[in-house]
Structure formats: structure tokens, C-alpha cells
Length: 174
Ligand SMILES: Cc1cc2nc3c(=O)[nH]c(=O)nc-3n(C[C@H](O)[C@H](O)[C@H](O)COP(=O)(O)O)c2cc1C
Image (cartoon, rainbow, N blue to C red; front, side, top):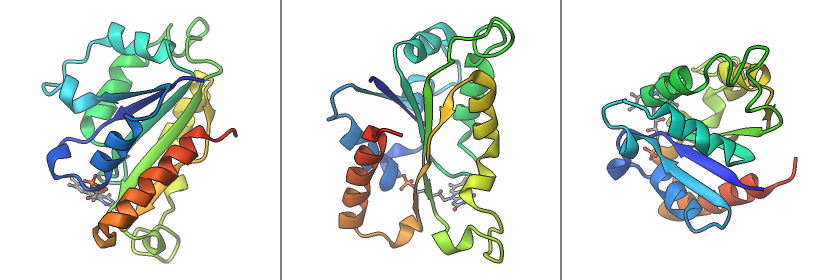
């Protein structure tokens, strides 16, 4: 089982959570960490290279901070350019079929805000429906999402512990 973690954070120098996760995941065997903003600061994505990376792995992880109830912009650009017709979807677009797909998301808002009656109204599961639909269309199995919320209030120790939890989450059999 080979896992690809695509990290999309536009400002990793100031990141608390995603940087810790990325550094921790880099120590794991059979895990490739791919820092999207470092590779494509001008948003010019090498589509062939990205498709090759996807083909080489079984479990695809998108790791990002929640920005406006979705992902940072470069990850959307990546989806728009890399998941092409005839490759990822369409009658002959079967390249991702059978792979597994996981989201690893950090949010500023606390868990209690992400529900009916909370100030964000909707759950992470509801807000990530486009990713779930993408997994469905491309024939990937959508696995449970890993979320760490209310990150402002986390101690350094809790951030480190969340990285260990993420490693366990990504190693699980589902
Ligand atoms: C442009 C922008 C948009 C954001 N949108 C949201 C949001 O919709 N929901 C939320 O809970 N937090 C939001 N945040 C907070 C980030 O999710 C939070 O700072 C990040 O998860 C922390 O991770 P890091 O320590 O790796 O930077 C936003 C932050 C920025 C800069």
C-alpha cells in the first residue's frame, strides 16, 4: 500500500498544524509527501507529472487548512487540470478507479461550530460533498476524513499528538 499525501498550504512558514503533519508524514515509509505550493508557486501545474504520481500510489490524501469552507485555491487548480476527461472520468477515464481517497483538514473553527445550530451551520461531512462526489465519479473509495478543529487553541503538544493520530488514521484499513 503506497500513500500519496498532497499538501496544499499557501503559507507553510506560518503554519502550526499542517507543517507539523507534513514533517511527521515525511518520516513514514511508503508515504510520499508532495508539497503542492512549493512545486507550483505560480499555479503552473505539470499535469503529466501529477498524473504519474497518482498512478504510483494506492491511497490518495489531500491535506489542507480549511479556507472558506473548502481547500486553498491551488488544490482546486490541481483538480481542474489533473483530473481530466478520458483519464479520471468518462467511459475511458478509469485511471483512478479502485484507489482510496482521504481528506486531512485543519479548521480554525471549533468542532461545535460545524453542525446545525452552530455558527458554521454545516458539518465537515456536508461541506466536503464536492470531494465525495469527485471520489464517486472517478471510482475512488472515499474513506473517513481526518479533522483537527479549533487549531488556535491547541498546545504544541496537542498539535504533535494530532500528527501521530493522522499517521494512525492514514495507516488504518477501512
Ligand atoms: C483565507 C482563509 C480562509 C479561512 N477559512 C476558514 C473556514 O472557512 N473555516 C475555518 O474553520 N477556518 C478557516 N480559516 C482558518 C484556517 O483553517 C486555519 O488557520 C488553519 O486550519 C490552521 O492551520 P495551519 O496551522 O496549518 O495554518 C481560514 C484561514 C484563512 C487564511
